[in-house]
Image 1 (cartoon, helix red, strand yellow):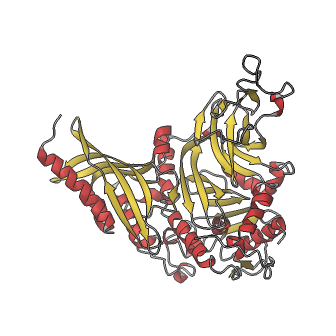
Image 2 (cartoon, rainbow over the protein chains, first blue to last red; image 1 turned 180 degrees about the vertical axis):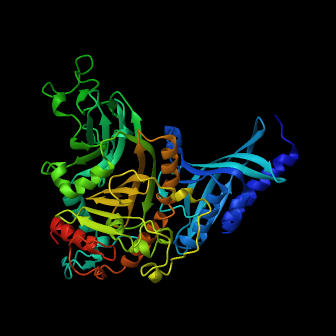
Length: 157
Length: 412
C-alpha cells in the first residue's frame, strides 16, 4: 500500500530527530521519542537468529527509558566520545493499524586521540504510532550485526 | 599501540603480594608464559554451558587461551572437545560460532571426522585408476582431531589441555565448589542469550576487577545508590587454598545514609528509579546472600547478582586486550515472570550494562596508564597485607591471594 507524503515525512523526521539527539549527546530528549507503552531493545543478530530472548539493553516502559537516560548522563563512568549515526533510507510498511519502519544504521565512535572506529552496524525495526498528535516509537528494536563490541555501548543507539 | 617487551630485564617481583609490577600486564614474554603455564597448563577452562548444545551434533566454537576449540555433543549425548584444526594441513574446521552437524569436514581436501574426532575418511585414499593415494600403511585411526579432556558439572562445561590437571572437584576445592553448586545446583539450565565485547586491557584486570570488592562502592554509582553491592553490606570474601578462585558474597543493603555511604562521593539518597521493576528481586537460593560473584581460575566469572545469572568467559588476545563472552541463563523451571525478571535485570550487566560499562571503561583506562610504565607497580594494601578470608569488603585481600597463586604458577 502507499503512504501519504505526510506520514512518510513524519517518519523520516522522527528517525532523523532521534539519531540527531543522541549524536548531540542530548539524551534527555531520548525518552520523548517513545510512546507509552513502549519497547526499546538492542539485540544481537546472533540471539535473534537463534531465537534467544536476551537483549543487550532492554527498556519496556517509559520509566526504564528515563532510568537509562539518567544512568548514561549521571551515573556511568566512561571516556568522552563523539558518536555519528549514519542511517539508510526508511522502508515503511502497513501492518493493520500499525506502521512498521526498517532502516540500516552504522555508528562511528570517536575517542580523543584515537582513530574513529565502527562501534556497530545493524538494522532498526520500528513500530510507529500517533500519540498526542505526534508520531512516536511504540517499538524500536535495534538488531546489531557486530559480533564483538569494541568495549562498551555507553549510550542508546 | 604496540605491547611492550622488557626482555632485557630480569623479572623480579618487587615485594610481597601487596605490590603488583606493571610488566605483568604489558610484557609479551610474560603473556607467552601465561599461555603455556596457565591456559595450556593444568587448569580447567570454562568453555560453555550444556544448554548451548542440547542436541546430538550441536557444536560451539570457543577458545582456551589463544587456542580455537570445538565443543560438540555426540550421538551418545556425551560432550567432546577438540582443537579446531584439521589433522591434514592445519585448516580451521569451524568458522561459525555455533551450529549443528552430523560430521566435520574440512573443505580443503575433505578430510572428514565424526563427532568424537575420529577421522572417518579421506578422498582418493586408495588413489585413482591405481595411481596416487595415501601409502598403504596410512592409518585413519592415527589421524583424528586432537581431542581435549572435558568435564561437565551441573550444566557447566570445562576443558583442559594438560594431562596433569587434577579432577575438577579437587581443583575447585570444597568451599568454592559449594558456591558453584549453589548456583549451578543441578537443575536444567535455560539459555537466554549471548553478548561479546573486546576490551583493551590485560585479561587479568577483569579477574582483579571482580575480586576487588571495594571498587564497587566507589566506581559504580548504580550499585552504591541502590545498595546492590556496597562496603557497608554484610559480606564475605572467600578463597580456595591456592588463592586463585574467589567467591565474593554479600547481602543487599538499603538506600540509606550511614557511616559507609557518607564516605561515598557518589551516593545519592534521593535518586529514585523511574521503573523499580529493575530491582524487583525474588530470593531463589539458599542462604541470605543476594549476590555471589565467583572467579574460577583461569577464565570464568560466574555471576549471580539478584536474579541475573551469567557466565563470562575470558579470552586473552595478547597482553593488551581480551574478550569477554557473556552467556546469560536461567533454569528450565523458570516461569514467564522469572524469565522476564532475569531479562530485565540483565540490564545491569554485559557490554551495555548499567554497572559493567564502568568496568570495561576503567580497565581500558588502567591499561592506558600502565602501558608506558612497565617498571611501575600497583598498591594492593587495602585491608592489610595478608591473604586470609575476610568478613567485609573494605579490602583488596582477594587480589593479594590471587597474586600469591599467580606467582606460584608463573614462578615469579
